[in-house]
Amino acid sequence: MPEERAGEYAREVPVARPEQTAGDIRRALIGHRFGAIADVAVLDGDRLLGLVPLTDLLAAAEDATAGSLMDTSPPLVSEHTGQEEAAWRAIEHGEVSLAVVDRDGKFLGVIPPRRLLGVLLHEHEEDLARAAGVVRGAAAGRMATEERVSRRYQHRLPWLLVGLAGALLSAGVIGRFEQSLERNVILAFFVPAVVYMADAVGTQTETLVVRGLSLGVPVRRVVRGEALTGLLIGITLSIVSFAMVLMIWGDREVATVLGLTLFGACSTATVVAVMLPWAFSRFGFDPAFGSGPLATVLQDLVSIALYFAIAVAVLG
Image (cartoon, rainbow, N blue to C red):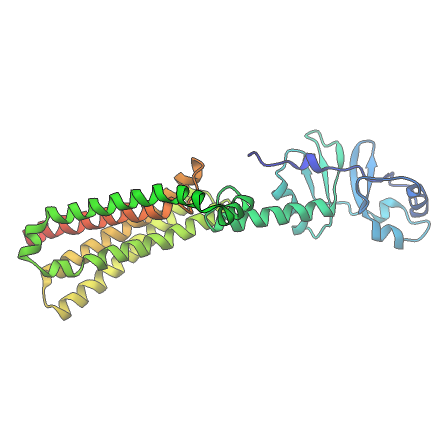
C-alpha cells in the first residue's frame, strides 16, 4: 500500500496579514470554524511568511502585530512528503502542527496536532510489527495472533515441511560421507557444534536485518556491515575452536577441519540471514513464518556440506 502524503492532511487554518494586530485577529476568529486552530498562518498573498501559535496570540498585547509574533522559519513540507517524515519533521522542530505547501510554494494549510499524533502512533505500531517480523502492519500482526487454529496450521505447515525436507537432505549429505566418519569417528562429535554456531550467527543477523527493514535502513548498508561482522566472528571462532580441539583431543587435522568450517559457515550464514528476510519482505511473504525455517535449512545444508568437504580435503 502506498504511503499517504502530507497534502492529504492539510487543513484550513486562520490566516492574517503581517500588519494585522493581535486584537484584530482574535476578534476575526469569533464565529468561524476552522479545520485546525493551533496556529494562525501569516501570509503575503498565497505565500507563507510564518506561523503564530494560538497560545502566543491569546497572550499578546492588543496592538502587537502578527509579523512580530510569528515564527518566521516554521518547518515546511511539500504536499507529496510522506506522512511519517512529515510527523517527525514537526517533532524535530518542537512544533505542534506543520505547514504544507505545494511545489510552487503556495500555502495549502496546516496538519493539526491530532493528525500528527495519529500518524506517529500508526507508524510506531507499524515499526513494532515489522521489528517482530510482521511486514504488513500491526493489524496483520494482531490477526496472526488471534486467527483460528486452521489458519495457523495453513500458514506454518508449508515452511515446516520445507524444513523437514532440508533435514532429510542434510541426513543424505552426512550419509554420503559415511566412510569418512568410519575412519574418523571424532568428526561426528562436532557436527552439532558446526550446525549450532552457524544457526546462532544467522539468527543474530536475521534479527538485525528485520529491525533495520522496519526502520527503513537500506539492505545494501546492512549487507556490508553484516558481511564484515560475519568474517570477524568466523575468524575468532576458527582460532578459538582450533586451539580448544588441539588442547583437548590433540588432533591437529581435526582442529584444522573444524576451524576452517566455522570460518566458512559463519561467513555464509550472515549472507543467507541478510538476503532471506529482505526477499520475503520484497515479495510480500511474512518473515515470521518463512524466513526462520528456510534460513535454518539453508544454513544447515551449507554448514554440513562445507564441514565434510573440508574434512575430505584435509583428512583424505
